[in-house]
Image (cartoon, rainbow, N blue to C red; front, side):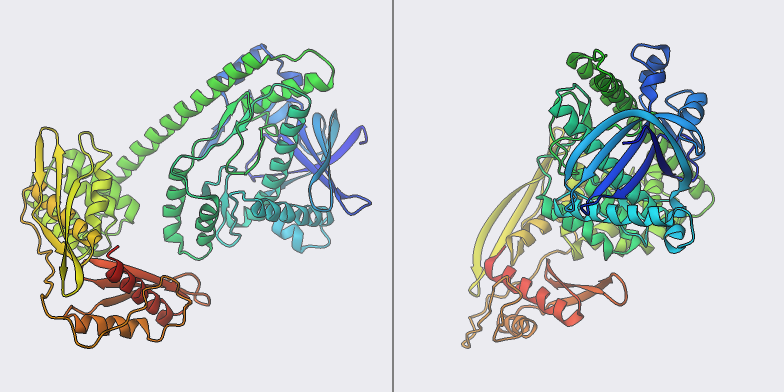
Length: 599
């Protein structure tokens, strides 16, 4: 590696604290030579210095809509330490040799001087790639080819990685989904993230091999986290779902994964699917990276390490706690900001046009006021009743104060739940977040009607020192009976009339003509009878009401995904396919299986 290095920086267009630069070349054997150069912050900020204590108190640079609060003074963060083009700067260079298969052959570390040749923004990258005359075209094209391969390799190895160039969707190291403010930034963002992940992984392995105590970045899965392949499928589904549903996927993935933390020992990184990982590439912005720089810099200079393993543990605990405190403060700030916006929407009579998220906030504000709901909210609520988010239904049913309008909305909700009793179970799930509530218990008995299983369920719950109990509800499936009992229990708790949930099951003799239904769950089996016709024939023979079908379409118009919902009494089943009729057949087959097995 030469003493004077070349490199370029790629950051957000507003960034002024540029702490990393990159350079890529192809090796003689067809592999790759990658150099990630990071500002030598530890030279200016040694352990226990005034600047070190200042950085430790802040932990990280915090970013806001209109600026930031830097971890280090701006004269350093934006000036002396930042890798501005044309200026010689001291750096710690991570020199990585990759084989053709992108595996790491060698990692070297060097404290040296570099000069940045260009300061590029993420948004510049697509234009440079399409302009062969641009001075950085060849380099950016080479880097783009390499990072595309690194991304594909990470995904094939099970990393929770997904990017949608068209919609600006990206995933963090932990697999959580975010949407970039500018969709044109995506390629540049991917380039930098892939090279930073590569450098951080190489440093973690280097520290392990050389027994250097550092802050590892650990990420673990929760006990309820699905299998990795199912998480990957969930992320990949974002390519086909409408943008309005992206927030739901983001929330789902967030709930599935633990917070990543720092520690002195290796616990692995679930999101990246790596055994060892660390943070090293942002010492201007993150204290963890600065501490690691202090350790690595001392090691390569053959100086005593500034931090013992015990001190690393104490620093990790401090950073982790500050992250929790900062996130909690940010959450409270955002919550209060959202409430203020909701109050403005109420006063400005903009309730009807509110999106689902804002409508939920408006609902919380009105409930918190403790008064009867205004006419504008009442009308808007009823208009969106059929597609109301279940969280809003739960808020009104469980927490709305007394009042004529609130009571009318509760009755309307119970009537809506009567057509889809599974919503009642979701409401009780929401109730778990309210002190003193617990999930209902069920008494289920099974009988036989017309050679068909029939189930009767009663639901009960204790809230505080009072016990509530539903009436008995009968359905063709155990699940359906329990859902109906849940809906009846809600009415009992609210002291309102129970909606008409009962399904009449005829006690009639079995048909002389035996009806054969293939109940296999494998949709690829070539059955002798169309499932739609078989289900219809089955219902007619058993004197049961015919099923109803509804459809929803998602995805691009040239690659639609149809979801068919088959409704039979209080039971529902779904089928999904690229064609409506195929989706309908799958939904009918699923309903047949439900009826036959009673599941």
